[in-house]
Length: 442
Ligand SMILES: Cc1cc2nc3c(=O)[nH]c(=O)nc-3n(C[C@H](O)[C@H](O)[C@H](O)COP(=O)(O)OP(=O)(O)OC[C@H]3O[C@@H](n4cnc5c(N)ncnc54)[C@H](O)[C@@H]3O)c2cc1C
Image (tube, rainbow, N blue to C red; front, side, top):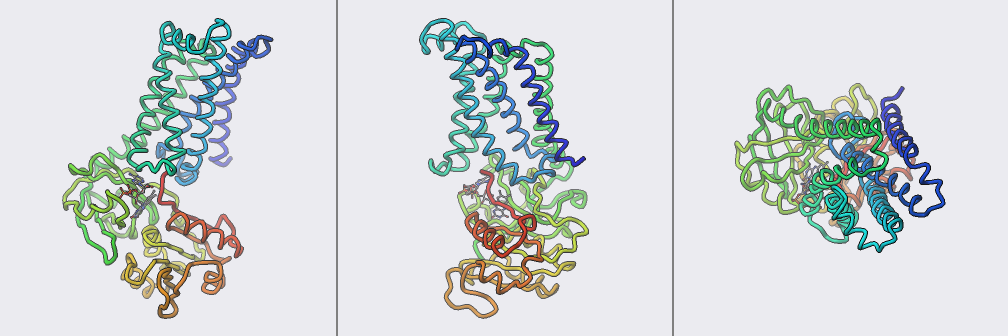
């Protein structure tokens, strides 16, 4: 059986077990004519579902290698967002149903009941704090764009998830009706252990092991011709640090100014080089100052990640489409694979004076006969075969007659990718032949 189906099956089985234990303890409540009892049963399953979804979220975003290999980082990030919304609803339902149910049974007001919870029920105050944190985290994620939150602010709000998970744990075992069943409590703890173990191993221990083994450090910093900077990272036995062209890693530069933040960047050259190279565009406060990193700075690397790769033994004709700094993973794929593939590159930039990695593209294109067309969106006249305009349906059709027979690798700003993807679909490229990398985690 396919590995994905097995994982999905096990996941469904776990949720099935939760439903079973919930029904075992709550069916009489559910069938009772008393509204408070019904609400209690609903509140319980909403609470259990909320925890199950929180654990799911950790698996989705924990950079857990075996899960990322099956689904890919982009899909997991998307799923993480929709699961977050579901979690928000279920946690609110849990809170409201339990509060109204207890208040109904005690024939008291909601505020009085809440105060009673805090005063007389073990760990419920902590659980309430966790509830507030989860709601704030979910809302900050849903509204990150509208609130114009800085990435770092959003990220630090997200860190409270760990505290919220810790705070919410006690009340589940102490007063959770369904969890008074010892078999269920054991199963519940096993779920926690499984998820936390995976999270700790892949998020912390694996990168720490790589850091200790390879002792990564910045070996060279080179300003590019446009507003990009090339950072070269070296280390011990780099040939044993396995990575694939097209993948990305999350880099933490361990100097005083930068140690507290980690940023993702794609590999921007092929894997025949021992050193890692990334090419960073100035697009914010961190990247603006990246050229100031000193040679010798140690680097903590989480990765490699991502499925924006060309499988071994693949012989398909390739079409690379890049916009701006989206060229980085494409450059690494191009230099690794152009020698074995019939390849076309369409590369869009604003102007002719700002083309990241241009010299390398020219070198590889000439060496391996890659048809390379540049597009410039803010120029009116350019020398043929290059084009003043966008990579749209008409231009793709004109430049790549056999587009439907090619496997496409696409990377660039989100709007650019959406437009190009729909043009490709309209031209008849099968969706499964369009691979893309999104330069965003939220
Ligand atoms: C898989 C992937 C591969 C990438 N590859 C490259 C590359 O090869 N070259 C390149 O120049 N850029 C790449 N990026 C984008 C790069 O990570 C961001 O431009 C950079 O982190 C911006 O940081 P900043 O503080 O300078 O900008 P800010 O103005 O703070 O942020 C700009 C945007 O970058 C994103 N971002 C900011 N900080 C982080 C962070 N710590 N982690 C994740 N995202 C963040 C957010 O979407 C934010 O809205 C990649 C992103 C991803 C997700």
